[in-house]
Image (cartoon, rainbow, N blue to C red; front, side):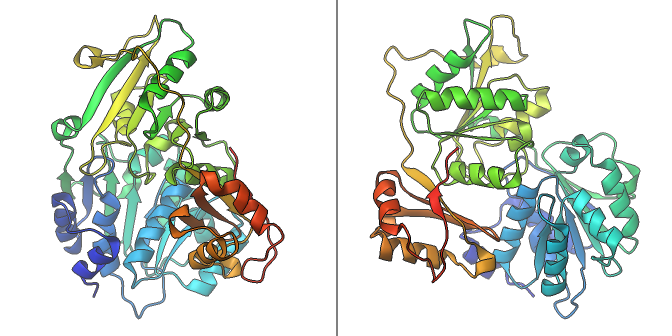
Length: 437
C-alpha cells in the first residue's frame, strides 16, 4: 500500500488540494468518475495516486491503461508515476520505433501503460500488450483527444479492453455528449471543480491594440515591456509559428517554438529550452495549451484570436497554475473583435522600453542518454569536474534514451565547450554542443 504522506514528501507537496482529496476518495470506491478541473490544478496526481494504489504488485500483467492526447503528456505522467514509485509504468507514443517499445514492454513488464491512442491500439493489435488483466481505463484530456480526431483509435482500444471495471475521465472543460465507446457514464461520480471566478482573480486580463493588421511590431513592444518574464505566444497556424519565431529571434529575444509538425527530437529540445529557462518565450500553436506541465509561466499572449471561449480558457490555463498569478494579453488588429474585451484592461506601452533581456541559461545537447547508462549525476559531475563549473552554473538536466539536455549559465557556455572538447563523459566519446533553436 502506498503511503500518501511519504509520496507527497518525495514530490515536495505539503498536502493534497480539495479536488485531489475528493478524487482520491471517489476513485478508490471503484466508481466510474468524471473529473472537471482547471488546467494546472493537479489532475494528474489526483487520479494517479488512487489508480496506482489499486495495482496488485505481485501481478506482472498490465492492470491499468491511461490514454493521453500527446507524447509530452505521456512522458510527464510517467515521470510523476516514477517519482511516486511502487508500480512499474511505461509510456508508449509515436515518434519512436514500435520495435523499441516492444523490447521495453518485454523487459520492464509494466503494470500501468500510459499511451497515445494510436500507439496503444498498435500494441494491442499486435499482441504486445495483453489486456486480460486491465481493470481500469483512464482517459486524460478526453475532450482534447476527441478534438484531435482520436475517436476511432480510442473506440478500438476500448473494444480490446473487455475486462475494464472502472473508467476515469479528466478534462478542464465539460462535454455535452460523451461518445458511446467510453461506456455507461450515466451513474458516474462527477467532480466539478471549475471555479472560474477564483481562477480569474489570479489572472490579469489585458487587451492590446495593434495599429496595423500585421501584429509583429506590437508583439515585440509588448515582449520588451515584459522583460525576462516567461511568456507563451499562441498562434493558430504552424507556418505562423515559424514566422513569429524568426522575427523575435532577429530582434534578439530568447525564443523557441512548439507545434505538432515538428520531429519529436526537436519538440523535446525546444520544450526543454523553455522549461529550463534557456528561452523565456515559447511561440506555439494551441498544442501547448493542453497537457503540458510547464511550471511558472507568467503570461499567455494571444497573437491569433482563440477559436472560441473554451480555447481561450485553456490558453490562459498555462499561467496562474496552482496558487500563482499570471496575465493574459489579447492582441487585436484594427478589424478584429473579441467578446469580453470590455471587461479587460487596455494595455498601454511604456514611454521608454527596456532593452531585450537574454535568458540566464543556455541549453547544451549531449549525444548520450539513458540507454548508455548516463545519469543526471554523471552529467553534472562531468561539467563541474572537467569544465570547472560551480553547482549553481548547472541547471535542469533531462535524459532521453539516446541523448540528453542540460542548462548551464549562459555566460559560461563558450569556456565550457572549449574545456570539454574531445573529453569523454563516463568513458564515452560523444557530441556536446549548443542546442540552438
